Image 1 (cartoon, rainbow, N blue to C red):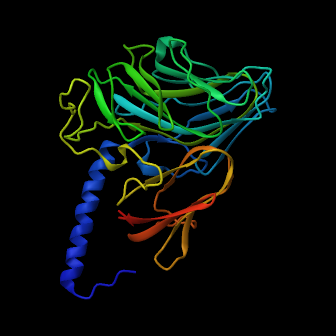
Image 2 (image 1 turned 90 degrees about the vertical axis):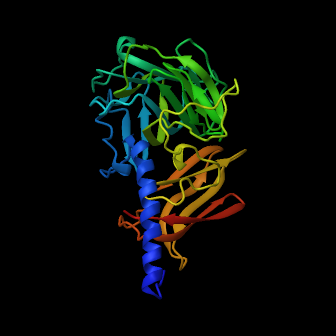
Image 3 (image 1 turned 30 degrees about the vertical axis):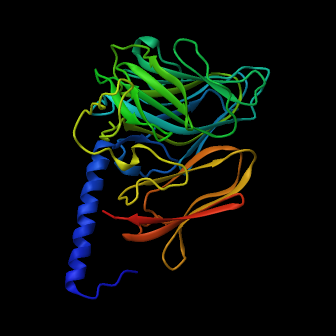
Length: 363
């Protein structure tokens, strides 16, 4: 708890909070969440909406949501989907789509095929959408052995095989010009107009791949699982406007300064480093990425106040190897917003424990 001993100190502290909150709100306006999925009815970060339809083709399959995770269990011969067909308004010109994904209980004898589409004029039926209304698409398929997955692009290229839970970052640019952005590995990357970059964790798997339909636009999203069986789990699925990196020291391969779409500073949450809360301070949501390198490990991540009381449990249990991300939106385990002030994020992953200080500026 913070105690103010004099009026001048209180006024100075409030002025600092106002200044930091104003700066953070400007950042949030530029990087506003366009869509975020969760199992409850709350809308995080002022999201424009969540999935409008989640469907499977028979009672043998199912879709369930818990927290910010969405789990689809598909029986052989069935198909499933989730979609948002109400136009994102205003239609974004460049976006970064992020989510964690894992595949389990996959039947190795029957290849699994899934596709993500961003485009326009989509419907909410449990079916795929045509390329004619797709701005860009990204395929996901299991490996031959069924023990991992690969991503596939429009040209038929495949990524390396990945296992466990992986964080996917999909950058798309429909702005009419090349855009520089802060990449998941902490570098400044550039994606050309009507192209896309795809990252798995901190590894870029597709670089400047052509959009499916450059004449299209980005307003709707659909995921469709057309064949195969097993369990696919998504966590922390969101679409944000793709931020332009404006760091004066960043330079493109030709050595010229990176051109910015505007003169505002790059937002703190445009990139995130492992084991470092980002942004910090924050007003709406802070993110924390961590990795389990080789084998499964016990994970216990939570937010605590200055008295050592747990405010919010973010992750608990045994997790397989992979790269993960959790978020704190200022809510406690009881669903009530915490007061502004200083908190601590404690992350115990396997034998390692890290503690980070958080500054929460409630609105």
